[in-house]
Amino acid sequence: MSTLTYTAVEDIPKVHATARKAFDSGKTKSLTFRKEQIAQLGYLIKDNADRLREALHADLGRPYEETDMLDFGPAFGQIKLAYESVEKWNKPQSVDFSLNWFPMRPKMFPEPKGVALLIAPFNIPIFLLFGPLTSAIAAGNAAVLKPSEQTPATSQLLAELLPKYLDPELYHIVNGGVPETTRLLELQWDHILYTGNGRVARIVAAAAAKHLTPLTLELGGKNPVVLDPKVDIKMAAKRILWGRFSNSGQICVCPEYVLVPAHFQDTFVDAIKETYQSFFPEGPENSKSFARIVTEAHAARIKRLLDETKGKIVVGGQTDVSKRYIAPTVVRDVTGDDSLMSEEIFGPVLAIVPVKDVDEAISFIRARDYPLAVYVFSHDKKFQRKVFENTKSGAAVVNETVVNAGVPSLPVGGIGPSGTGYYSGKHAFEQFSHYRTTLNNPGWVDTLIFNFRYPPFKPSYRKYTAALFGNLPPRPGQKPSFAKRWGFWIVFALVGASSVLLTKQGRLLSLTQLKGLIRA
Ligand code: NAD
Image (tube, rainbow, N blue to C red):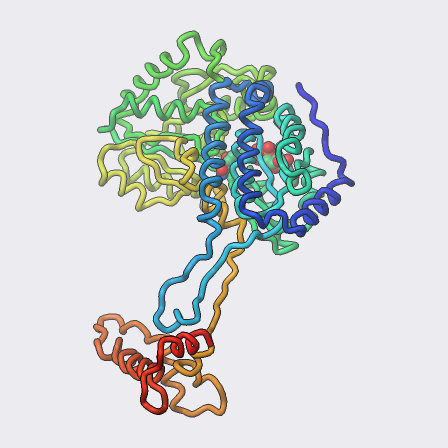
């Protein structure tokens, strides 16, 4: 087991102060600087890919290929997207057009919030740290990263590498466990992004509330699959098992259970057995394509869930807690009150829950917390729509699992108990930004439109106020009359235009005079 050097608790406020001072220096205002830092994140991974693969193998028994697929690929996707989008994302945004207000040029422009705290879990450490960090940098923030203490080799390596590649004053890693994270959470941040379980999320949220710090929560849950018996079952079995067994089931968007019509369970189980054999021809324990559970404690927890199940094991079932090994396992005939349905398994165990039909499947999902993803395997659009329209989740995915979290332009995020906000791409950029609103009102607007706000008031001014803010929509059931909708503004525009264009003497203004008037 690798050892992880924890940051001294008393040094944590200094890290925070250094990041704040560096942010206040204005260094991150330059978009070129932000782009360089984003690119450096990519080269940190590229230059040290072998060491990172090794570290993840030590921590999670991860096959190297899985590290490329789950950590490097998605991180590169975020880095490329942010690098290419920094200018676009940071442009001022115009707001919905309104004839009444457009002369004041209302706009919004993104500004960095300041210093962000990013707390990550053990399961996909590089993507889950660097994905959000990329967006935080694109938005111009400084950041302190807190990797998981449960992946000591990876967290130690990241602490060594980050200052070599990124500005060491702006971006920091704090390593440690509960005391270190608790100290971090006592400090005032401008945004906190926490990825992990719902129990700790409540601690983080309570700490953020003390400072009224905005918060993004990326949590877990139990992601269901709804299976249409008319689907290509081989394709479904492959994609479901791949999603469930990757990283030994330790992926937040893994499918946890499959709702299958009872009469179709045997067919599905046959397809599972065939796929299982093709994935692990030499058996999973000897396979170089299957990871391990992060700690013995988590392996023991999953073993207990398996020991207590009343379902029937179809494949797998073997466990060796001392080796953090839980065989990829599928259990059939699982019911709603089974141990496997009692909590997020976060391990390589797939439950098959037989139901009468799609309506019962929907009721089953609706009776539980909103998950990160609802997966539907069906070629029938009506079937897909029925499930999605009657359930809620972070993502609604057809004929695929897990891949949705890796598509760079698709933000990842939950709803309610599975999370709040997004941690990737433009949507994460927006969370690390404050959209400052602005307007710039030329003097002539008063002459033309807005003089009626100044005292002394006259009762007639009320109709101008009403016109400026706009009419109410028609009462339900009534159609808007054209005159009511446009009449005032047609007259107003005609009168306004002529009063601008004509001098008191009735002569047309020259172009230069007109420009001068507009500038004023
Ligand atoms: P973990 O044990 O590594 O903990 C996550 C972080 O919380 C760590 O940095 C840890 O130091 C910190 N922490 C632990 N206890 C704490 C405490 N008492 N106070 C303050 N901080 C504390 O990982 P985990 O939470 O077990 O992660 C797995 C969970 O994360 C699963 O539920 C999974 O679904 C979820 N997850 C969600 C996403 C997503 O995108 N929504 C992604 C990955 C994982």
